[in-house]
Length: 487
Image (tube, rainbow, N blue to C red; front, side):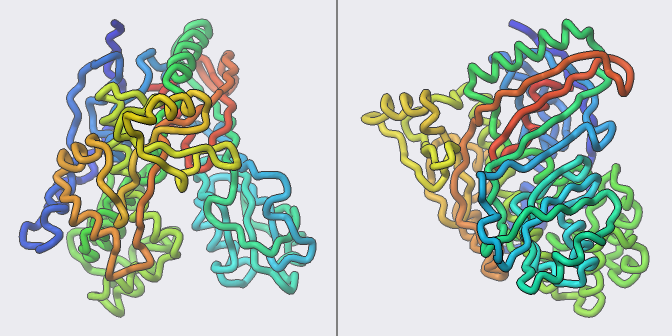
């Protein structure tokens, strides 16, 4: 059996020493007890042909600590330039452009090196309208070239008239139609990716061999493990789910301080965040925080006037951003559950009794709204549907509507020191009900068919590999790439 080398992984110490649980915090104490438990290093070992990480990385902070494949990775570097990571939304024909005289202007947006939320704010300023007029189907990678649709409330066509004169660096807008429906999160079918990995220190022949072997392993497993990628948690400061955990625990003060000030070494604003973390001096921080930290500055502005209103400070943030906190915490727990399933060698593309499966929707993709628990009576029929890609094994996204499911979920919650009653009640977020989440389920594996072109790296030393593939909405290209790169 192949024994993989220990991967060379960047370490994030995450300033863990700054944050400690407080046993006197009443109903939050059980949940706060594990504030940094998921930051602890994992023992390096090799079990059943699986890589297990041995360092605290952003991935392990996000709950991903295992590979589905055992073939050695090709290594290399992604995003040496933003143009090496290209994303294009895929829509059903005619969807979102269904009314010639619709009140929403539908525009194709292409951006490079832009955070989606920051760009929407700048677009609202450029057009001098509220950002609430804008709708989009998915938050795209920042360090990338991405193309997506946005819908803008424009009943009098004043925004449409300004499009020809629109100018923001590294942003292009192209009118594609009108609609009477707002574009909302999840409206797209998925995304098509074209990603180049550079500076691979292997021969072309070896790279092709490893790529083919990983592809074969993924095919045998039914596709890639459907983890939530690191982008959901923060690639420089992976704190989104930690903020969500504290919100669910009802500790809005710590949630606010974590979002504003918890320092991470690779953050350009490490020093000023550290000072705020130590001093809680909002007024001084407001003079120091740079303009590009717009949301932090908006919260600080509020806190200077209302220093004890932590919930009010959160409410100055866009609703889409706020919801990411609690959703990211659900995603972390899901990743831990899926990691555990893989490490326990429980199949991802074959159901066992007690699993919950979802069925194929009208778009041919997993429909998490149509589910069924697997019993001994129907397990053969369900697995036949899974083989035909008409059903998928799922694991839970735990929320206030969660009903205890497979034993592995209970084991993971116990390992994390989480009390199920406190957790499900916490997801009601009584103090900010707009952040409540009922939960649901998510397919554990997604079929993918990447096509690789391997050649000498024209943009640097070594070998380059360019992958092209489609993923359904809500799935992460970085999760697929990690199986091929591993280093």
